[in-house]
Picture 1 (cartoon, one colour):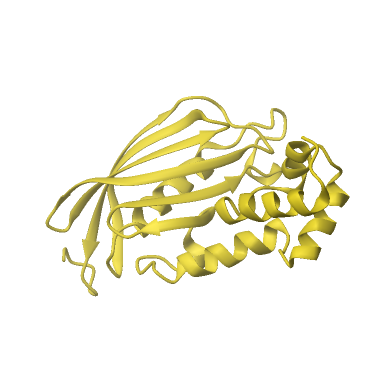
Picture 2 (tube, one colour; picture 1 turned 90 degrees about the horizontal axis):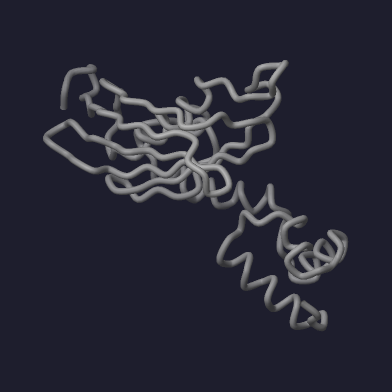
Amino acid sequence: MSLNPRERRERLKEMLATNPFLSDRRLARHFGVSIQTIRLDRMALGIPDQRTRTKEVAERVYGRVRSLGQREIVGELIDVDLGKTAISVMEVSPEMAFERTGIARSHYIFAQADSLAICLIDAQNVVTGIANLKFKRPAKVGEKLIAKAQVIRVKGNKSVVLVETRSQGELVFRGKFLVFALDERGNPA
């Protein structure tokens, strides 16, 4: 794709407005230019780096969540529509994996999904009562896990939340969570 700098910057701006999580490396491949060229284009447009863009999106989203504090959510919360859907992203780091194989430990994948299911509920106190889990394939160090949660049923203070975690479009994990909203004393709301 051979664009002049002005056209490339305009397309870059559009792409990052649609998906602020795109890395400079991925953008460089897309446009067929160096990573440094993308960095210079971003600077000229006043667009911050990927980490800063992700943080800005997260700060807007975290303000809507009542059931968990920002540090209690495993992964980076990208979007939440309370009582409906939520999305988080987590990159598997070496600390999350077995040393010999580089395969992510299952409790990290579960924790991302569980915290996403809980933060989706519009209540102060929410706990998981039952979880039906299926690990579909191993995830390795460096993989970006995208978890999407959806409330599929609500009855009183109980909600059933389906969470699917994918990496590069491939299903890694699927879980159904029965979560309960509690009052301030820990009793069913």
